Every structure is written in structure tokens, then in C-alpha cells.
Length: 104
Image 1 (cartoon, one colour):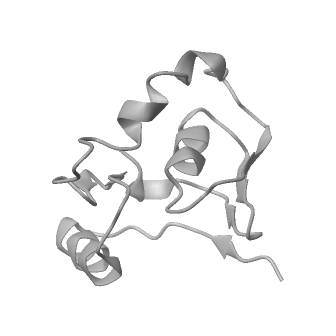
Image 2 (cartoon, one colour):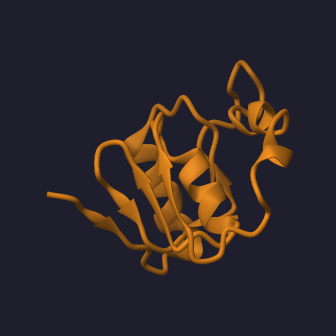
């Protein structure tokens, strides 16, 4: 059964606690203005990787459904939601219906 991930408003301390509880993180994702892996050995990974092909993905994905095949921590799903995708679905069947207050 697919699960729907919805964002609830969180304050900075709550976000920091949740990030810490879920760590250690491989991907450095900005959640609510807080980096999950600021000391990553590859720098701001995977954003630095994404920069090399970001132009290949339309800036406006309004109303689209996207599939994040190598989802891991969801970096690309969050990026697709920032670009307006109605739904970002990962290969495990989870759906990110709203980036809410966790996205930067």
C-alpha cells in the first residue's frame, strides 16, 4: 500500500531533532533551512551533481506526476515539487504530495 507523505509545520528545533534522529545522512538536503549533512565529503551532495543536468528538466512541472527511481532520501522528489509537480512518487510507492514547510 502506498503511503502519502505530508508536511506539518515544524519549528527549527523540531526539524533539527528529526534530522538528528534520522541520521546519519548521506545526502545533504535542505529541510526547513537546515542541512541534513553539511559536512558531506562530496560537499553539497547531491545538489552539486544535480547542477550538471538541472537544465534538462523543465522548470515548470505544474500538474505533472514524476517518478523518482533512485529516491534514497528524496532530494530529487523535493526538487520536482519545488518545480510544481502535483505528485512526486518514489520507486517504493511513497508519494510526496506537498513539500510544505520542509523545503528550502
